[in-house]
Length: 159
Image (cartoon, rainbow, N blue to C red; front, top):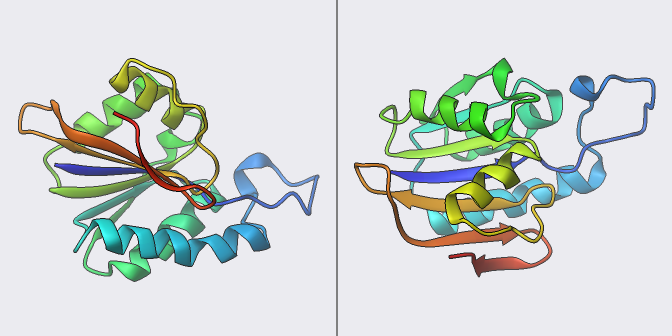
């Protein structure tokens, strides 16, 4: 299985009274989405499943991915918003066999902590719109290099 963990694009703070869950994307977040999609196209020829938090900024990020991969099934999981890394991983396992190529859109610190737990080392930074690409064999063991992509830093190998 090919798994992409994508942190939502940069959120807007223009309306300070707005709840965290309702925050959309700021202009930088919107401008970053084509870069995210371009990188996904470099990594993948198709996507089977897109899973996202129900928070507005995650939904907007996932919708950009969905538009780029229109054949992918799209699932919204409210449990991803505010999930810790253990909950995130449990949800991943529930969807494990529901697509050979999956993109999950979520939030920090869960994404960063999950990657750190898998690799056994710290991930220096997991900024907004960053993605980690992980390949797993049929038994759930990481295969090959784990790649990190950030809008500013580009692609690098984590492990």
